[in-house]
Image (cartoon, rainbow, N blue to C red; front, side, top):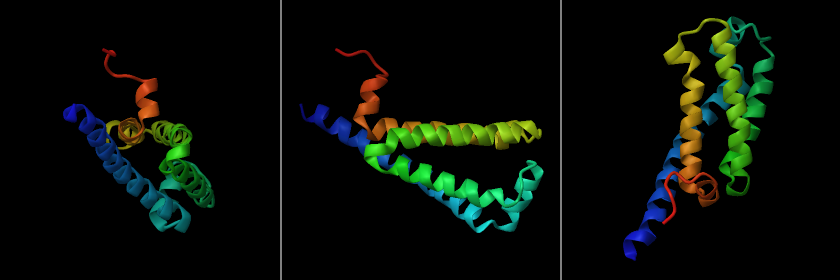
Length: 134
């Protein structure tokens, strides 16, 4: 019985760690967009986006990130961040950026984002069971 009760605690802890790593990475991205630093301006220009759009993108990403980090709204935040990351994938694909390192980076972050949520939220695990119930 003890082994069964510690398994969800381990999953929750692992999920919290994965969520923290993803959250920090996305928070760093938010800061660079909101500050509209030169590399963000250059990347926006390469993608064909107006330079002043970076701040708006950063604010939208920040709102989605906050929703993801709040347990009650985490699923909504994950869905919205998935859409955001999908847009990043498309924008990079459209201008022929390197596939594995740049285009798919949004997919990698999205997988980590959902893995963290899956591990830390039993509602998501109940909705998407990875193994059959006994």
